[in-house]
Image (cartoon, rainbow, N blue to C red; front, side, top):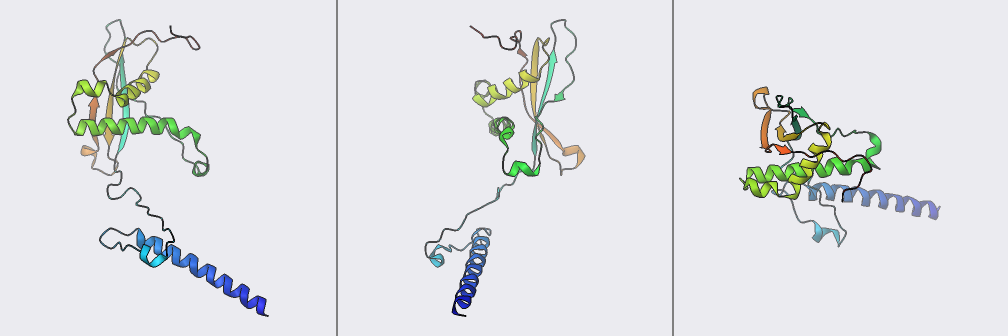
Length: 188
């Protein structure tokens, strides 16, 4: 009889503690105007401080477009979107090693967007690591017989009206390409 009371009390305490933790977490993560510092009430118990991308959530997608020219003097190819596709499935919550490459490219494109928005000197931008990473991704998507390529970063606002849905961010100069090394070949 006493052990049932102890188990019942322990269960009620655990449920109460979990409920208090969840309520405190929600209160801790309300907008700053309502946010109270709850640490003085928790006795040192840590509360997570999530912000879920606030106060500036992402509202656009960045796309990488490429066009090429050949050495025969023909007109450049049309722009084509070479932004990596990222599969989204329930297993990616636990294990998603394939996300690192697209995430690195996305971060580089975001950094170029920031540079462009802040009117950075184009010569400085072209020497930056993000620019080189985006160029490498563009080069990997180019045809083997391309003599030069140009890439374009485009912001796409899915919720905007159609006439304001796309906004160019940065267009590279034409970049001359050398021959593509054979697979497995080393450069000296």
